[in-house]
Length: 385
Image (tube, rainbow, N blue to C red; front, side, top):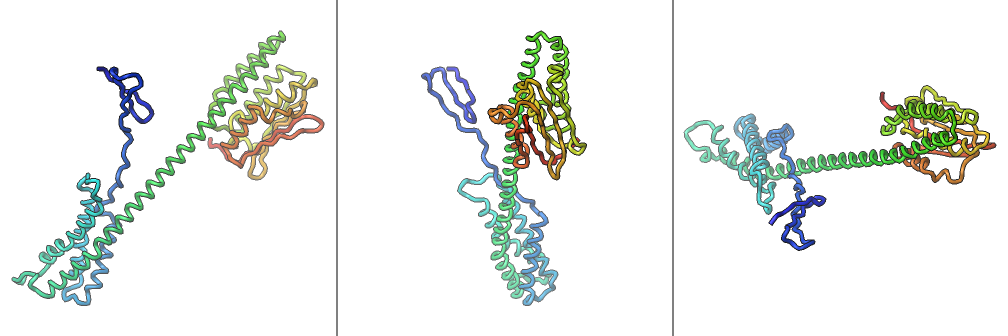
């Protein structure tokens, strides 16, 4: 019996030749389980500092009844705290796997509580003077050991619990920041994908209209058809690589506009006059590719072409306050009723919204006695060179 495995989304479906049509065996998802929090440093500075502070506070509590030197008292407490810290860090890493019903923090806290009296006894035995008697037979030494052990057993687990809480809280904050960073990265990628999709919709819209103009010249048998086609080829050779750019500048956009208007002027030299001018401060401002070109193309198609006597198109870019304002003014037949719902303008509005949010706006108003003024404002974001 032959088996095949076919991936379906995140799961895997295994089919057998002997099965009836439509039968399947879904395999379990291979999504990785959430990893446990990473252990902290075994002798990190923050943990050692907590142990030193705890030993100092305990030494102040024991000092009034202590008969030996204070450095010896502090050294014993510090050594006991260090042993507890080592056990805490050991059980943080070992064993690597625990039963599901047994929490690791229970093992750590229990280990701290158990090691304190054992470590205290060994440290007292090794640091007591050799006077021929066992340390537990000396009442003052036994009292000091008992006091030290009681303080350690009472305070050690609480300190361990607070350290666990801080570590887990830090891990949770780090994970939350990582998730937020990943979410923002996904959102940015989705925004870039949406911008590129809109850009891809602009490409055929512009190219098809331009090629239709060339075809019209060919159908008319105009001797300028070959010259216009050559100029169009030169223009497309420079323009098409920029159509896929996620960002551009006013200078690049105006370069395309000049080339486009030059081609249109060759097509109708007696019916189209034009000018393109920009303030030097506006040339480096970020501008979505083909945004100005969309307005100029609309002015030619809906304003100048239908006008029997033709008209003029003036393209301007200026800096006013914290904005860069770009205007396309034509003296054609005026604002068509359906232009607002056109593909070019609707895509341009959405691209401006996605790129700049509410900081960008597009306004179309009629010009007296006839014509249209299209203006959009961009925030002064300079594209790095």
